[in-house]
Amino acid sequence: MMLSNWARWMAISLTAFLASASFALVGVNQKSEALPLATTTTSITTGTQTNNSTESELSLPLSTSPQQIASSSLPYDARLIDIRSVNPKIALDIRYATTNNFLKQKLYSAARCVLRGAAARRLSQVQQDLEKQGLGLKVYDCYRPLSVQKLMWKVKPDSRYVANPAQGSRHNRGAAVDITLVDRNGKELEMPTSFDDFTERAHRNYSGASAQAKKNSKLLENAMKKYGFIPLATEWWHFDAPGWDNYALLDVKFGEIP
Image (cartoon, rainbow, N blue to C red; front, side, top):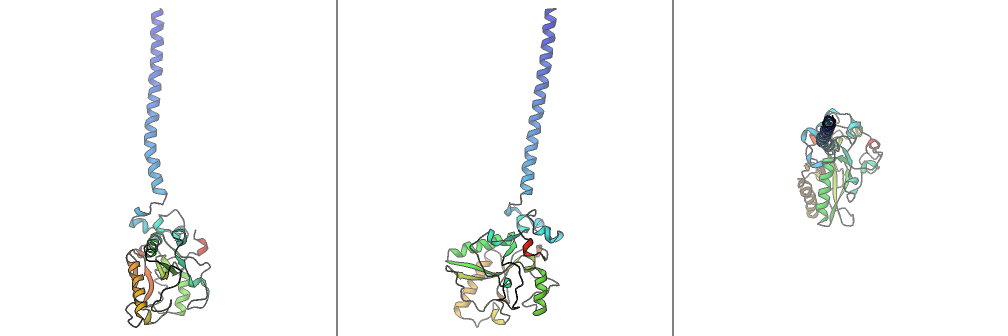
């Protein structure tokens, strides 16, 4: 009888041990499957991996609302980003936030340079390169709401200088910048014309500018082209970001942009 009780106790103990081991093994397996899933989810949703954005990610704005485009849920390259949050050393002279422009009226509610994340990152790289030469960038205009484009077209319906709002401007996509060079003290370098000079003197092939102005204009052009920006033939100050046609036209107010 004693042997029978001992055998029964051993059987119960063995059963309990096997059940406990099985439960622990299941727990380990569940954790090992959950970890990769959590890691994958994080890498997809953070939106901070700026170098891995694909062309399909950049085309997302084409099927989303203006409000969504300004939000942080999109990939970094497709978001609207304030350039001061990327490189505060880039000087701003946002003309359409003042009356110092060809319309002689304030068109922007805030003096901000906002660009798609991909363009903002490239512009920061240009600034960093120029600093090695004791130079820097000053921005006149970046993202421009489509409603402002319509006002400009009413005053200057000339597609050589103002894009027809029916097709829109690269500025309306957050993928163009109007810019010049400054020295280490923030003084603008001599250029062929002033900003928004709607004459042939502002064209890149204009030969009548001073030797120094032509040299400075070419220096700016080469610095921008090095990082993929595309110069506009009729305006020495205007450059389009590569991939601008991946982005939709926008009419988002500056106050709605983070």
